[in-house]
Amino acid sequence: MSTSRLLVTSLVFSGLAGVFVTPSSAQVELEDELVMERPIPALNTIWIEEMTWIEIRDALAEGKRTAIVPTGGIEQNGPYVAMGKHNYVLEGMCERIARTLGDALCAPIIKLVPEGGINPPTGHMRYSGTLSVRQETFEAMLEDVGQSLHQHGFDWVIYIGDSGGNQTGMQNAADRLNAEWGTRKALFIPEFYDNAGVQQHMEETFGIYEESEGWHDNYWLSAMQAAVDPETVRYEERVQAGRASINGVSLVPLGRTIAVGEELMNWRTDHTLLRSAPPWGCSVPVIFSRGTSHRLRLKRVTWPCVAFAVSCVLWLPGCFSAGSPAPSDPEEFLFVWTTDSDSVDLNYLVVLDADSDSETYGAVVSTLPVPTEGAIRGHHTEHSMPPGGEPLFVNDFGTGETYLIDLADPQSADAGRFLHGRGPSHVAAFVRTAR
Image 1 (cartoon, rainbow, N blue to C red):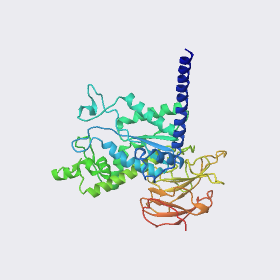
Image 2 (image 1 turned 180 degrees about the vertical axis):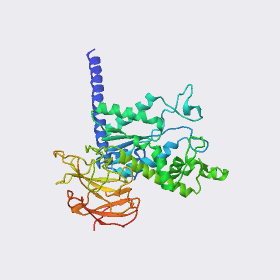
Image 3 (image 1 turned 90 degrees about the horizontal axis):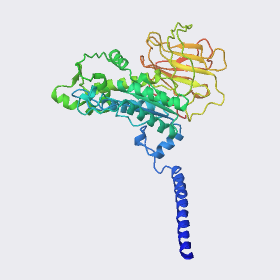
Image 4 (image 1 turned 180 degrees about the horizontal axis):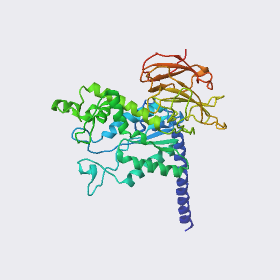
């Protein structure tokens, strides 16, 4: 009897010992795995789905703390264009925006969005192949994706959408996340979906005007698609069938259409970054109708901390993206290379008082207009302040001219001096290399 009890007791304790040992060992193995070194070089991509978990971990550690969540759709787009039209455009757009920001990665494109009632079908759901989800499903998905990215260490979650039906859901999801987190770290950027602005830019830049043929399709969107993948607009098939046009505009030659699409995506990138509130915490007020000694009308000045076409350059504590060390002895000024809101007056450099303890915090200290007639489209600048007081490179897209600006005395009447003009034309990026 005692032998039997002893045997049972031994088995029970043996089993319990196994229960306690196994999780501890697994936890140790997991902790070791989570800190393992990357065994191969990282892929040069900004798409989270194309990266390994180790590459994402290392990218976060290196300062890529912004995640962009693009939303597209699967919907009918007329007789020529693939159902994933918005998703193809987003492939090109999110890539541009993320690489321009420099500290961003793109989450997988959310392709399942509200497209109309399912039963009975309404909207795009009346056409074969359209896939729709309920509004609450869409918003829940956006929230869960945002929560996942936040959990992994992304400081900023940015929502952009290429379809009109997605806009309200993204705003709602961002609002709920911010309420839960107690801070504004989820950003919905409505300026990304400025179709009228894109069309106007095409008309003004290329002289291309459309007359609607009644399809859910247009030239400017097809041009952006073609710049990503011409097959998605069935280019070859339409040429052979004699139908390579939309809304009275020919897609032929393909090279020209792609060039139009590239320019429109570049403009859209610039516009998105320029018009969106900076997610780095810079609390610089917007200035309306402030006159200057140069008769520039600052009707609307916007403050992107990093932008592709119009950039602001910071020497301000607390306004650096993750991974960027603040200078040891910062000057308390904000330098903005910007463009007149109605493109009438010349580009100008604006110097703002960025000292939060100053009585004139946010006020214009001085300005400097470009000295070249026709320079009304601010383009690229350097993405960080030049070292050792060296001049700053800036570029104007309209004239193509590149300038060096002397910023030695930010409080001077002229904010600095344009040291040089008519340099390299339409420069896309400025990078300083060691001599």
